[in-house]
Length: 288
Ligand SMILES: NC(=O)c1ccc[n+]([C@@H]2O[C@H](COP(=O)([O-])OP(=O)(O)OC[C@H]3O[C@@H](n4cnc5c(N)ncnc54)[C@H](OP(=O)(O)O)[C@@H]3O)[C@@H](O)[C@H]2O)c1
Image (cartoon, rainbow, N blue to C red; front, side, top):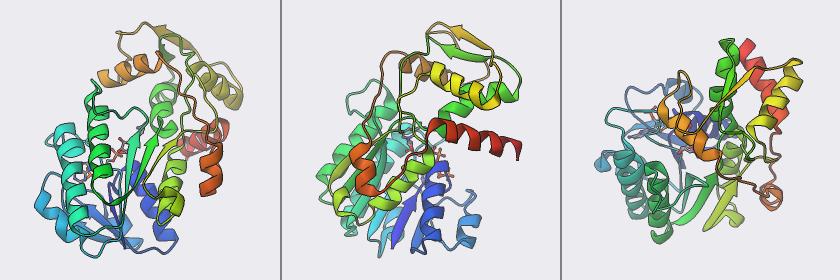
């Protein structure tokens, strides 16, 4: 049986639904106030627990072969801090999984993970990766680049919906292999029990490296019209978004993140979603 932690989130939800469609036995660790009922109706077995409560983890892990965690404090707030969830919570989960005899632990991380990073979330991801590699459990670390589904709606989709100019921090010419969330979900699903995923760190990006200028040009092709754009200098804030988004966008303007996905896509049989196809389905979902 597979235990998913984070199934009420965006990526974990996609992983859980793909697995339930494949008729896999899926258990989900959920909090009482999270919207997990649709997954139960789709066949998942819920177990109440919380990464901040180490004692709640052993019952959820009983009889589990594979753990997949996408959980993060990122969007949650309140008691769910990066320190308590992404750092201490992941460490408790890894220790409890080792104790329970779990055979494979699939951890969704980021290409920026680094135990010495000045950025707390990247530092926590790096620490969890290190703990997992030392745990003795068969591990698969998925180091994903930025998700199209998170970044593009924030920077381009929201302003388009609100009929205001898109605001780009910096020149927007640095190229990043943004990846569709459904493709990251596919890697997690295909990694289960796959020999090529055993004790591996797999870097995941999209099919092409694109800049904000490229993304805006692709939108203009799809909507068949010009998109008004304003620029800000690093340190300035994007209107209507939390400061962390502006900081991250300024950071993205300092490096490129090309990733050659040829070998990984072939090994796991995954066809990556091209940017323009992602934009078309995003715009359809906006209209729905
Ligand atoms: N955004 C990007 O561009 C990007 C890039 C690379 C990697 N990633 C990584 O991708 C992963 C998935 O992101 P996402 O967008 O799917 O996140 P999300 O939608 O914010 O989902 C977070 C999930 O974590 C769960 N969670 C939070 N605190 C918890 C706790 N204390 N105990 C148990 N569960 C807890 C949430 O459950 P509740 O519903 O109960 O709150 C929710 O299911 C994250 O690990 C993120 O760091 C993101």
